[in-house]
Image (cartoon, rainbow, N blue to C red; front, side, top):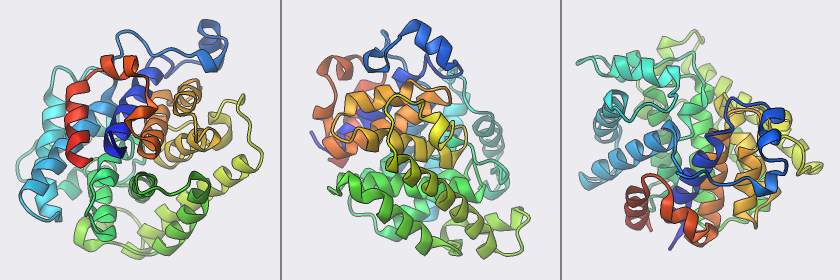
Length: 332
């Protein structure tokens, strides 16, 4: 099976593997498993809100595309419904992020524009840990991919860095699914981010920037892309002196915020581009937001290698397996 199935399975596997290590220290993780290369997939392989919200976006995207070409309103309606349904679900008991919970509460109020429900001060990784499906849908134009990635972030996390990191995450998944060599990614991502500075997509974002304190929409957008360019500097420095046995969170950040989750998840993949299992283990064996970091690493590795990247035994018992496979089959 192809890139979409591989990315979705990898995302969930990384999420499940990082779930027990999130909030733990390196000393605590090492006490339970001295060697990161042997970190197991838990049994049962339960996931967190990262996979749940990815599936919510996946379902909304499927609904929107069934209705016609992807546009802001066509995506926003089902996405809002899916996010609110997730917020209300009894299965939403996996330590969900506070920004997502607060914003989904506001989205549940009839007549509230999503721009008013958004938290423009939050750039938590909840913005981009769920965005991978957009990079897996073939046929989206670059403008649709970028705009939709920002919209799905903006429903909860409206900080410009959350928007930019979401675009970079979806763009990376797209590049890998299209066969881009991993070694080319840092340069391509830097060029892309540099080209986006100062570009505010009012078609997809409406008046979101007006709810922040920036002098103009253009300075709002620039702020986000500049923070992403800064973390790409840290990624380049890490790759210049690679270290497999250093906690990745000490290098590119703990991953609680969007640009760090993106960079640290990508670092773990790029350190082990041809060994997907080792890459997600390295990502989950970390001191920060381990499940989100490993979730992104798994999405990148799966987009590169397809579903064959993952042990059949792991793929067979991951939570939400049937839905992951159904969406993967649709986009493969």
